[in-house]
Length: 116
Image 1: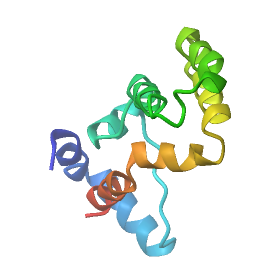
Image 2: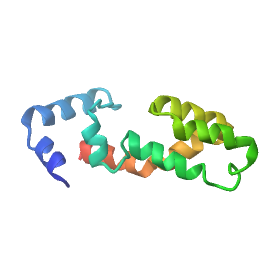
Image 3: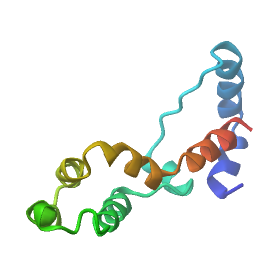
Image 4: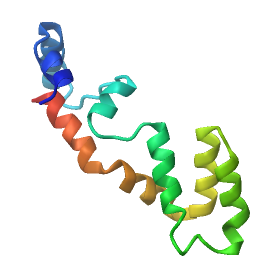
């Protein structure tokens, strides 16, 4: 447990919220701010973009055919546009690469912490 989780678990209203919705819906989606995902070990935008950039260093993408797009990625300041460029480069591998960065196990850890 961490300070954020301990704080939430000690909140009566939050516990009531979890109890009611988990019993009635059986499927619960919690929308929370960026701080909660960072606490769970997920990368922030900068961390995600840095991890994507590291994947662009793989030999498969270090060819002259991708050089212009990688340079465009490096010069771009907007994270959304950077990730769009990465999607063009990675093609059908894009989703798998992003999923591996986000690590599904970390997402399940957040879910278990919130529901325990």
